[in-house]
Amino acid sequence: MVAPLLNSLADASAGLTGLLGRAPALQGFFHWAFFDTDAASHDARTADGTYMFLWWLSVFWFVLLMGLMGWFCFRWRRKPGVAAPVSPSHHTALEITWTIIPTLLLVVIFFKGFWDYAERVVARGDSVRMNLRAYKWNWEMTYASGRSITETMSVGGRMNEANIFYVPEGSGIQLKMTSSDVIHSFWVPDWRIKCDIFPNRYTSVWFETETLDPADPEVQIHPDKNPDSPGLAHEEEFRYKDHIVFCAEYCGDFHSEMIAVIRVVPREVYASWVTDPGIDWPGMNLADIGEILWKAKGCSSCHTTNGSAGTGPTWRNAWGTQVPLTDGTSVLYDENYVRNSIYTPAAQIHQGFANQMTVFTPSSVNERELGAIMAFMMRLAGQEMDPLAAQSIIDGGPASTTPPEGGAEPTPDAP
Image (cartoon, rainbow, N blue to C red; front, side, top):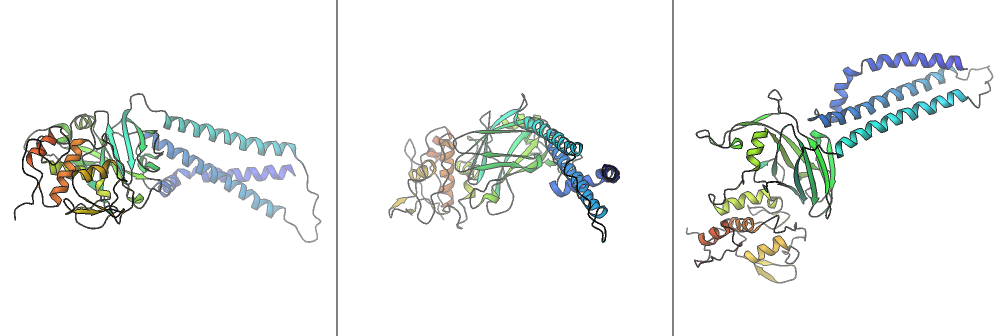
């Protein structure tokens, strides 16, 4: 009984050795089938390697065991006229063998997975640390320098605008993450990382960015902001590569469009960008700054500027109107209503809309930013903020449309 079994195992092993010898040729196909794109970092390639190791290990044992079962069924099938032999009830050596081998394999799998997990949760000591806030339905990054996001790009879909987060190439990046409302999940497929984000607590994830390779077809060229004059490194021409951030935890109506872009740039470009304020408060029109913040703060995900319906009421032609509330009263759409709607949105709920506005704090939307948003709202209603009030906000004063030193109230532009 034992001799035929050993001979069958030897035959099967020879056949499987030939199959696994051709595995590298199949590796590319199966990697593409499972991952679609190549891993974009060392850690991501390690994750791919672990996954493919488990895949081929499973394939090996499946083929071996199913092959043996098929061979045994054929070799020792019941034949007409031949009495069935008495089946042995116990074989110590065989039972020990099929217990020890799978146990050893499980030990290998455990340590392989543990080492990969430990590398993912213990960040490099020289990692760049950033704060990430998730909310319905956007992402907001705050850097150690105090810099926040002012750049967006169109990605299609209803929400359309995605924030762009700059990170340096060839560096470790550690994110301290929290949510302002419900559970979200930070997922970057290119780096094979996913981490859940919860309200009222912090979670952390880290990853390594790749070194930009000019031969990489996904590496793009950022144009020079002003070719006629030299500028800062992030205003000159430079290479970059984008990676899409998704939310992997269902969080509401526009969960599938909760997208951001992580842009890997050269280190000197990042160093220049992260220390630049991003918004030239003294040099830009306050309403133009408000439009930037409408995108960067995620307001565009709920509030349109063209009059169409959204998750929240449109901002077009809203300033100065009477807002019907769910309690049957109405309130003037002015600076007080806007402030309440941003900091305490549940206090005055616009009739016809649900109480699902993200709660902002003075640290996430400060007075200058609030004033710029008000100036943008006024422009959408054909009004301009009084220059004295706008200058006071730019200088760091409270967000108020009333000029601190007199001046006319906002009036519609002359035809």
